[in-house]
Length: 457
Ligand code: BES
Ligand code: MN
Ligand code: MN
Image 1 (tube, protein in one colour):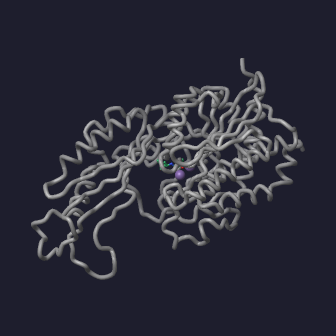
Image 2 (tube, protein in one colour):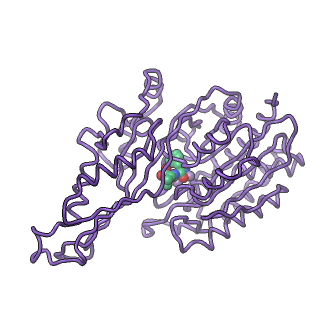
Image 3 (cartoon, rainbow, N blue to C red):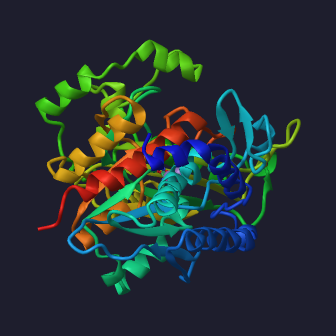
């Protein structure tokens, strides 16, 4: 057995301890109370990367710090930039977790913790594979750079700003990201498309205080009624979003891609039953996979208004608010959509209330061409690490900075996900298969080797 493989085997349980340590740091980027934990996690990563022998440093931003590290250049060889995020989503609702979100717990081959799959576990595979190379061979066969951020889950503002100023040191031949999912257990995948997103908060401001709905009901505009009605008008009964011009730039699905998607082993009945529902709903004329991967969507993520305590309390709430998003597909432009949405909502907003729309995050969608030697290297590495060649999929999720990285650095993006769609990302009881964690490390170690076979011209 090659030295590196021996090393991976020998240190498997140490790798898990490292992952658990990382998972214990509650890096919720949406929660201002977690600032110190965010700083601690960035430092923890920088220290880990330094200990491996990489040149590593923290880069402050207006938001959360970036962690940057690089190995020495290897003349004539590929340079890879690994991107990932150390921040995680909020844990709410806490009462539904079977074990505490920041006390990683091993159950049936999984580690359960917030961030296990998204993205700490996946990100760490590339750091640990690098450790294995350095510990056994003393050097990497290619140059690897790490760019790790702490604001992915809130829109990547700090990193976006950094990319406007300073990209020379990030120069590379391809970008590797493990922050997506496999197609199914035992079926690894390379993701060639991500949806974009435009995420909003909408507030409807009514009277200057909550009012008795008996005294005032029927005459005073009710902020909650207005909010419900406005939101309901965003999408029609056939699943079409009603904002004018919304579909103008949507890139249609080609017959070829449609056929490819239809050939994927997708069991619709099983899909719904796994989610505990009796079926789904979406844009007419599209299958569930087409809807999630290739079509836009409108989803309310949170609704707040008035009284929610026990029993009846009859009021007209002074304020109502919602958080919602559009998932976008190429070539929709988030800023354009925001402008037409604002006009559309203003027209629906009746007298007696005032609306306030804020965009909280946005990014365009993307599809990448698979036609490069880097993809062949990734395919070979995955076949080695997972024992099965990957299939090519799109994803409904968004990684806000990816299209900008692609634009600025002008290189291929390899989305190599080790997670599963049912890892409960963003949900209670997030988990990551430890077998996939180790397969990911093995694949990554092999990827550095495969990429070194593609000498740069
Ligand atoms: N890792 C996900 C993106 C993802 C989700 C990939 C599902 C594959 C399948 C990423 O961390 C994420 O959750 N992004 C957010 C961005 C948003 C908060 C701006 C998303 O997609 O909701
Ligand atoms: Mn992620
Ligand atoms: Mn996420």
